[in-house]
Image (cartoon, rainbow, N blue to C red; front, side):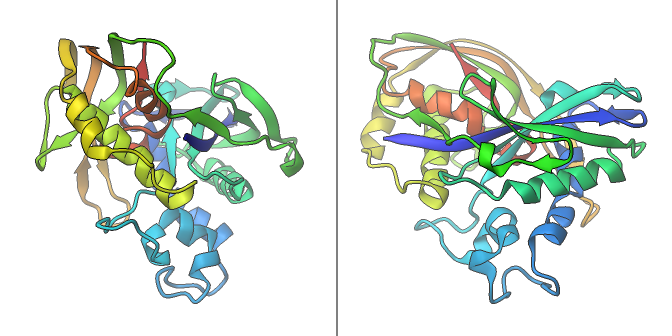
Length: 310
């Protein structure tokens, strides 16, 4: 039982000064990206991905409006998009002309995605301007990453996309760890908002954290990968509830994004910091490791909910 996905790192060089405000890099990258992506990936003349006759084959519909293609697990009305941005390294950074920078993109398909649309969209987005001052940049290269976060292949360089160099997807085992694990530390790197019984929680009890991580992996795998997880959801939830939160050192960050489409402000806050757990953890740790790549909780597309496990 495995979870497969692709990870890429997009490298840029600034042409003019670019500033990424605190808590906003993911939102800045996401901002106009959907509009530009649609222009590159959708058929000319398409006005609505939900009604277009070619929507099952449309890359834009599959990636940005998955509800439009009508393939949903039971009880799910708003499917997650099959990608996340990771740009926390750019938080509150001012880059001068000539400075390099990068951000990551994770795509949760088990088959090679249509990366060329992302490349063309990011190239145009950077050239049109990023951040409050609309600083301009140039896409220099794109690397495919392995599970260690290192380069597995360079798939774009010198203005040329090398599709033949793309490596197989990363494959994470979801089977229980091969050794006994009785303690683990989770570090929440970007704001993480978890909900239980319809309300945001202020501390990540293990049962809630595991359930959100497991459900996200299961949904992504069902929609875009090998299919539903063949596991005992209720039994795992009952066992996860017995794991104790023994240390919690967190702070809540309250950030917001402004929708370019509606003009409304939306909260993007959550907690960051560390939590330590004790109990029988071997069957749960693989899902937390997967959550490092998928994110957990709300607003994962913008890079929220990124965590690491020790």
